[in-house]
Image 1 (cartoon, rainbow, N blue to C red):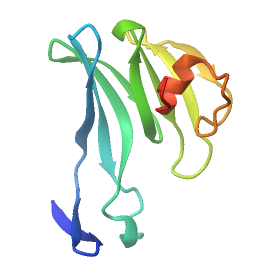
Image 2 (tube, rainbow, N blue to C red):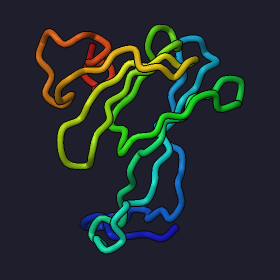
Image 3 (cartoon, rainbow, N blue to C red):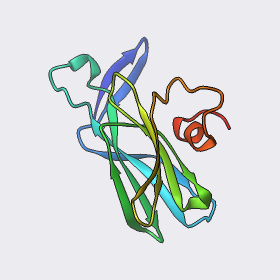
Length: 136
């Protein structure tokens, strides 16, 4: 890992390999999840070399990964339904995002929000607000 100037008097790590970040524990206390971050995908854009893209969500129980979800980029995520489901917001670096509610055991998508999760109406379902990182 090397360092890149991140602003006046600041440096930010440049990561060459994927790493885990955004650890969370479900209400059951046993199910855990994290994002796997990957290096910025455009090696020619050196101004963004310090950035990473969260491209995978991994869920584990008792130290063993039981489910992996892949996306262009995960922007937010949370456990839902007591840890039996996850809700997450995914999308490209620039553009509209989408929100999903997924059963962890089966990997089946239970619901999908058709619309940009960054601009939610007040009456959006609670799971969508949780997926997008909005306060409940």
